[in-house]
Length: 77
Image 1: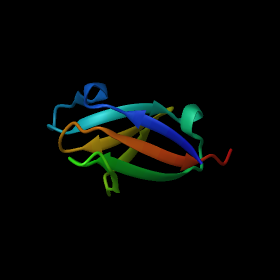
Image 2 (image 1 turned 90 degrees about the vertical axis):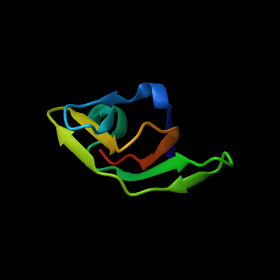
Image 3 (image 1 turned 135 degrees about the vertical axis):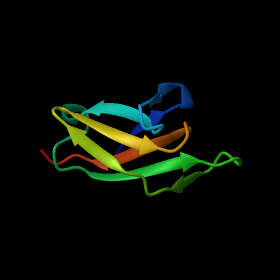
């Protein structure tokens, strides 16, 4: 399993007020099994369910607020 860590600073707010982190599909893989985890106040990771949108060659992880966390995936090309 591969892991990509994201920070609050990585998020960009869209016109709808959502906060997005962008990844290229080639970085993560076309048929990846994705797990999104958010870091809690204790410094531990918790699995969260958030929308994931694909557009062109990009994938967007969508949050209602910027957060520290990680994306865990198993790449299937």
